[in-house]
Amino acid sequence: MNLSFHTMMLLAYTIPNIYVFIRVWQLFISKGYKLHYAAVYLFFAAIYPVSESFNDGRFGFIGAILSTISDYLLPFCLYLFLFVLLFDIFLLINLIIKVLPAKTRKNYDFRKYCLTAILALSALVVTGGVINFRTIRTSIYQIDVPARSSEIRNLRIAFAADFHIDPETEIGFVRRFTRKVQSMAPDLMLYGGDIAEGHHTDMGMAEHEKLLSQITTKYGVYGVLGNHEYYRGQDKGSFFDRAGIEILQDTVIVIGNSFSLAGRLDSHFRSRKQVGELLESAVDSLPVILLDHRPTELLEASRTRADVQLSGHTHHGQMFPINLITRKVYLLSKGYRKIGNTHFFVTSGIRQWRFPVRTTGKSEIMVIDINFTK
Image (cartoon, rainbow, N blue to C red):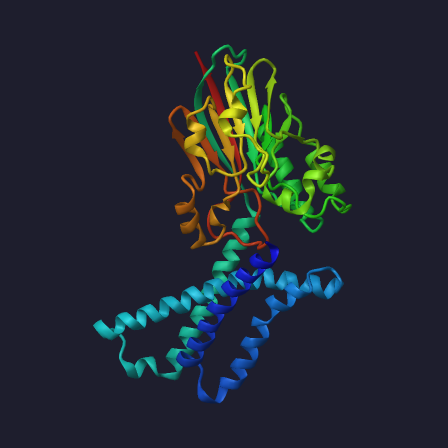
């Protein structure tokens, strides 16, 4: 599986780069500079595949530096490709409506300014994406849920997913997240999976665990596992115990005679129960809150007794135009939607998968204020 994923990543990187290399060569580079351009372009284009071959830890500091550069270089290449493609579309339209004379297009200064603009715009988009990623925002929702026999009338939930914490995660980001959650004063803290990366024997996450363990609420801190915990062995580790997070694995618990909380295993776990089967054990007379890492079975969940479902996983694509794909793949890629009697929430994630750039969605903590109605 890892081999096929890395092969797909390499193809997704190589094919657009070939296109960009050829079109920039043809459109913008003067004859006397073509060899210089080829050398510079190929040097930078080689950083990602070289960094991938160095990511096993054997090359220490050099491997880490190359990996960091490639994490910013890949998003830059994505937007460089899109802006070159957009320029080509303009040239195609220009063949029909003749906005730009051929003499102007071939002028050296015009080509120089166009190439500079394409490079600058690509860099600006990535810079904006870095700022957007590093800015933690709060999305606040208010919903009404039948109280049934619940002993409470209001419940404030703080919900986060897709943290992807590993030993290299910036400790300042985790600290800001912890403070942000505490400032919201939630009654219940919930995590929607993909919280921890790395192998379960990693010992470099003590400070991250300590910070997360400082989050305490009236009704506790709970979470479910995502696909990345499954990939990296964190489902067998003790990270969650040390971070003060109780993991629900296809289980339903009753909290304070006020509501039922259910947590599903990720779909990577073949033994996981169907959502209807899982919720059969929920108390009939209490509201039901469901955690499911992936928002892939919303219609099925809407036909159960779940009043609220919280999910993550999608990152809302993380970078444009990938969000256009997640919108097609998932019934709800981010935000809120009510289907039947069930309120669904999908967060775009508190952090990112690999690339520290987010050009769609936001690094968010969802805060859901539930009013239990008679």
